[in-house]
Every structure is written in structure tokens, then in C-alpha cells.
Length: 332
Length: 284
Ligand SMILES: Nc1ncnc2c1ncn2[C@@H]1O[C@H](COP(=O)(O)OP(=O)(O)OP(=O)(O)O)[C@@H](O)[C@H]1O
Ligand SMILES: [Mg+2]
Image (tube, rainbow over the protein chains, first blue to last red):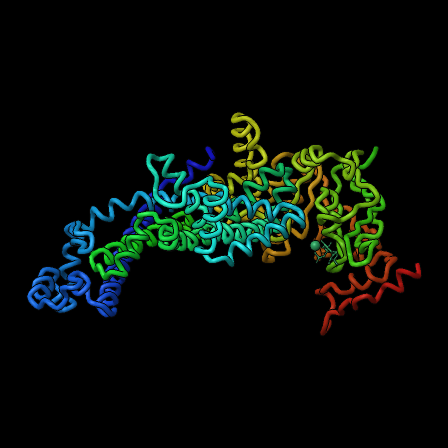
């Protein structure tokens, strides 16, 4: 690489400017997406059947005075746009409102739940990448029998719904083998990881199958390329050819699928947290939706959507790093 | 003196439907002397690429090789993987038809050129980098220092083919294998690249096998010309025999008749009818 450095002078500065402009555009685009998404969710919630005030009051729902007081307190008596305005102003000031079921600040409520979900997604994501990539690579390089065997397993993993995987794993590893706890989040990092292992595996299984398939196809595809023949013809050793010319190039499609899989992983936490009784953001979202806790649903969805957007932005960024042809401001 | 390369009754069989497989090369024999340039011409699918790839043991996976290929007296099919790697790295350089396909798009030109030195020490790599720069000069690339930092897609086909030639010559090989190196380029670039290959290999005394469909080009570049037809070498010519010499095989005759000639006026160039010479060949 040393020989390359002195060739970057002026165009490098221009490239950085291009990157900054592109980055600012990207941020603006993300902000707009969030705004639109939050409004859609707001409207959808208002239109959904059921009335939060009735739920709050329970058997006192007939009390007209109480209804009026609560409606005023939560601004339910005002037009939709005004309500949305209230909420977004609060959001910009760091005030996410109050949950009426938990009688607690939404921000502290969510903050308490984030670690579990973040750990679950990170754990699951790591499993997906390692498991998916290794399986795909082995499948591509191994002989016919191993390849076919893996291929069958992948089809099963892909076709099985998440909650079925959860039930099977709980039955086998918790109830029968007694290796892992069935419910709860555990204490300390090790305890948490222990508790999160089955949920993370559940979350990761079908996603790793997707990554494995793409990895296998990409590796097989790249192996056939002319530039791999060139690399071999130049007397490079097999590990180098595999690393620098096959896997390196296969990373392009793998990165693309990783972006899609990451989105599915985040969405999957909703099912997995409920199946394993974890109090993460996903299970909070489900509880809040069933009880029409607007403030919580609103903020939680925004959080989830933000996570989507950030992951996608990261994948795009990574793509630019991996494939020089997609980079802006090249030296042509 | 033994020639640099001896290809001796080379037969190449790929696993076909029948248990014996399908033989694609039916006993190809030729030699290339030190410093000699040999051209191979022949119709599409006649086995030119298979032949020179087999020289570097780059035959299709699963293919069987019979007969022998000796480089400097050492049998290539008998080499261990390690010897094979060293032979490809140090003794043989290859140039392919489409440089944009043959060079990995994700690495910079500088990385590509010096890639075979990655496992050597930093001192070696510095020497290699300097040599790469010098070779880019020799293949007449302006501003080579800038080119080292470019990616392949930022270069034209002609430029990139020069880079490929520089890469093939970087370790000073004894034999250069060029498989239609000019076919993907425009006409003026074709001439330049062909001239470049000839000049550089003459300077360094490197032997050359040059595959092309351009029979005039091969006459200008090569000391001898092999004509391939359906997996066999059917004729060996010297450049002077291209014009009015005695031709033994009817396929060669037809091939030569297909050349456009500015001294003659024709409405259409004759085509070589497919499979027309099999009886002719069998009868010999
Ligand atoms: N891996 C393979 N498996 C089966 N057949 C093959 C394989 N590679 C090449 N062939 C066949 O062998 C024959 C010779 O191919 P080759 O590529 O050597 O031709 P060529 O003379 O280089 O042609 P061209 O001028 O088109 O490059 C062709 O008929 C081709 O279809
Ligand atoms: Mg060919």
C-alpha cells in the first residue's frame, strides 16, 4: 500500500467534500423518513378501534367528568394535527410524554428496556454473521454430499416460523436438557448472555440460513471469475486467492443481504421477546399496542424505525468501502 | 539444446456423459525455443486456449491430462502444488483477452501489480513497487505514480491491458502466454499493445506464445505459426509462407483465403465452412 499514498493529493480533498455532502443529504433524508413514519403511525393509532380513555378508566368508563379530565390531560379533545404537534414538540425537547398504563415517563420506560433488546440484537446478529458466513463458505467449498446436507438444513431453517423455532428450542434445551432458562433476562453480563442464548439462536436461525445461501452462491460465483484465474496464474497460494479474490468480492452481495437481514432481526425481537418473556423494547411495543398506550407506541416505533435507518445507512457506507466502483468522486 | 517448452502428445479429456469422457485436445505437440515467439491461430473452439492454459496447469477442474508438458525439462503435470505455484509465479507470465474481466476490480492497480510480493519482506516489496513503476513507464503509461492509486474501472481497456502486460513481466518470466491480448481493444490500441509485447519480450529475451485470430498480426510478431483445427495442430508455418508459400492443409488454405486483401477487390470475403475439412484431414 505504501506506493499508493503519494497519489492521493488534491482529488482526496474533493472526495471528502463529496462524502460530507452525501452524508448531509443522507441525514436529511432520514429525518424526513422519520417524520413521515411518525405521522403515519400517529394517524393509524387514532383510527384504530378502541378508546384509551375507556381503557384507563376501566369500570369507571361511564364517568363523564373523569373522561373530560383525562381527554384534556392527554390532549385527546384537540384536532389530530394539534395533538401530533404537541407530541413532536415534546420529542424535540426530549420529552416523550407519559405512559398511562405504567404511569411513568416514556423515556425512562424505554431506556430501561433498551439494554435487553440491544444485547439480544447484537448477540443474534453476531450469530447470524458467523453461522451464516461459515456455513455458506463450507457449503460452497465442500463436496457434493456436505453441500446437499447443508442445503436441506437451510431450507428447513428458512421455512420454519420464528415462534415454532422458539417452541422447539425451549422444549429441547430448557425443558428436556435443562441447559438454558425458559424465561427472564438474568443478572450480570454472563447471566444475561445465558438467558439470551436461546432467544438469540431463535432470532438468528432463519436469518443465518439466508446469509448462508447468499454466501454460498456468491462464493461459487466468484470462484468462476476470470480474475481468479489470473490470480492463480500468477502463482498466488490458495488461501490468498480465496481471501483476496473470492471472499473479498463475495462480500458485496453478502453485505446487501446483511442489510435486509438486519431489518428482519430488529423486527424479529418483537416475536422473540414475547415468546421468551424478556422485557425488551419489542415486548413493550406489543403491550403498548394492545392497550392503546399512544405515547409508548409512538416513541417505540420511532426507535425501531431509527434503528432500521441507521443499519441501512451503515450498510450503504460499508458497500462504498467494499466496492470502489460505487464510490462517489472517483479519480476518473 | 532442449527447447524452453516442449508440449508432447498433449491430450486433454473432460468428463462427458460417456465414461471415457470427451477428448478436447487430440495429441498436441510443439516446442518453443528460448527467446522464440510462436503464434497459434485457428477457428473458435479449436483448442487454442485449452492448450496454453494447460501449459500453466490451468486446465478446467476435473480435466485429465495425458502426454507431457516440459518447461525447461521439468514435467508440469508431475509438479507438486508448491512447485506449480512457484513455476506460475516466476517462470510464466499470462495476458488474457479482456483486461477488465481478468483484473479484480476491488484492488488498486498498485496492489495488483505487486500482489505476488505480499508474502516477501518489506524491503522486497519496496523493490517490487519501484519495479512496477518502472514497468508502467516501459509499457508507455504516462503518470504511472497516479495510475498505481487508481482502480481498474478508472482505466481504459488499452491502459489496463498494458498494466496486465506489466504485471505479467514483473517477475521476469521465461515464457509469456498471451491469449488474444488485443482482441478486446480498438484497432490503433491493438497495434500499440502488440508492438509493446514484441518490444518488451525481445529486450528481455522472453519466449512468447501468442494466440490471435489476426493472421497478419501473427505473421508480423512470430517466428513460427501453428494452425489449430478441432483440437489438433494441423500445420506449422513460417511467416514468409503466409504469402504464397506451400500450404499442406486445406483448412489453412481456406483460412488464408479469408483474409481481406487491399490489392484484390472482392464483394464478399469467403467464409470457412464449419467441419468442411474433416474428411480432408482424415484422408492424410
Ligand atoms: N471446461 C470445459 N468443459 C468442457 N468443454 C470445454 C471446456 N473448456 C473448453 N471446452 C471446449 O473445448 C473446445 C476448445 O476450447 P478453447 O477455449 O480452447 O477454444 P479456442 O480455440 O480458445 O477458441 P476461441 O478462439 O473462441 O477462444 C471448445 O469446443 C470448448 O467448448
Ligand atoms: Mg480462446
